Length: 223
Ligand code: PMT
Image (tube, rainbow, N blue to C red):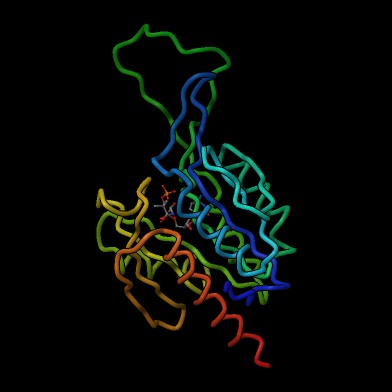
């Protein structure tokens, strides 16, 4: 039987990839399918948590018992996350958020009139870093999608974003990471501990993440 060990906990999960419009028909985006974040939301709900899932540009069925909020851009995701985060005990950010967006969005479809087209991109707000600045007892879990120096880069993100746990995955591999059913992750904690898991289905990775979240909750709120 499913353990209901997250009953009473409020968990905010993000999933999918943001799309930053260039004009009404084009965007800057990434390859996230939402599978990883949806698996996390489903695992948390099965274990009794009250789950809000903020998802960007996904085509997956909403897991049973989960409240879903659809967004598209990084700015929309930021606003939705800020709306819900103060009510959340745990925030888990599996979404792939654009780090840059076009400086201007054209009002009508850009015409093919020139040979070289340069897009000016400006940074988006780092949502997780914003949450890191304002977190009290909240538990913040990030993901790190890297193509090189996986663990070194993930460690920097734990500190910069003030996270409790980061889930690092190597997105240069075609068998794990973006749009696959399986993932292989390393957990890195704020205190320096790290743990690498075997490759497994994203639903099982999600259960492993929830086990770690429960351990962090237990350590933070001793009985
Ligand atoms: O959706 P799938 O197809 O199943 O693929 C899963 C995945 C590869 C997208 C997922 O496992 C994953 O790695 N998600 C994080 C992707 C990402 O944006 O990583 P990052 O290393 O660029 O960002 C680090 C963390 O900061 C992430 O938790 C991200 O949500 C967050 N972030 C990043 C930029 C930004 N502007 N705001 C953020 O909150």
